Image (cartoon, rainbow, N blue to C red; front, side, top):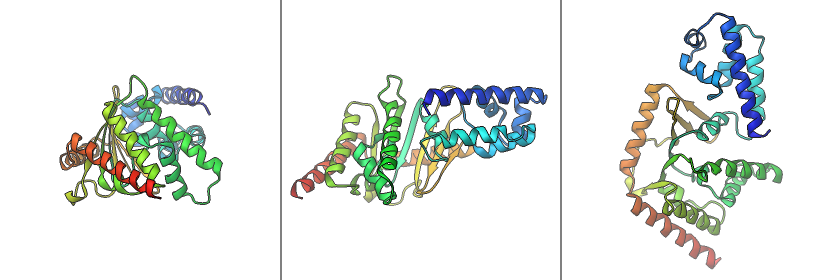
Length: 277
């Protein structure tokens, strides 16, 4: 489904939610309290800015007695998304974020990945997948990265652990090209990247990747992910803790200039390795 068409259906979801809420005689705050989200979130749902999780849609159906219409709509839109069910809202949010801060402990962040790097990661995780499946994953991830080509692209901060820079993904040539791509984005000032060296030892957020997103017209969010699932966090207290963890990561990292030098050195190491194979 084209993105414009999907956005139109989310707006319809919001209009329908507002209609049923008002028919039930509930304010946004009252409905939010009954389905365990804030009234502000109900407002964002109604505007089509935020997309409710499936469990929230189910609770809305229960409270408004709508016979499952909201659950079915959300489930249908999730199924038509090219992303995993736990990631589809994150992909929607990053497209409207004004600032993204990401920590990547083992793998280069998706928005920075080259096509061949994406392919190598996808094949490694799905060794029996069809070529069509692999190509769909590559295309959807590269489509996401187009937000960095836009004049209104978000301010993008990335903290990489050195493991993500040094760990070979695919061939040495693929890694050299991937690191060259990151270095180019840094030099063009499209992204600010710092690297936590292995010598730094223990650091904040050692359990996995972390992403923070800020927006012009809604509260900030945090997102964490493991190999099999991800969690979008918007409780203000939890987001503040995640922001503090990210601040600790940044002070552990090398300076931007030192980080660029490390990335370029690693690219050259992979290039030499590729030339001898």
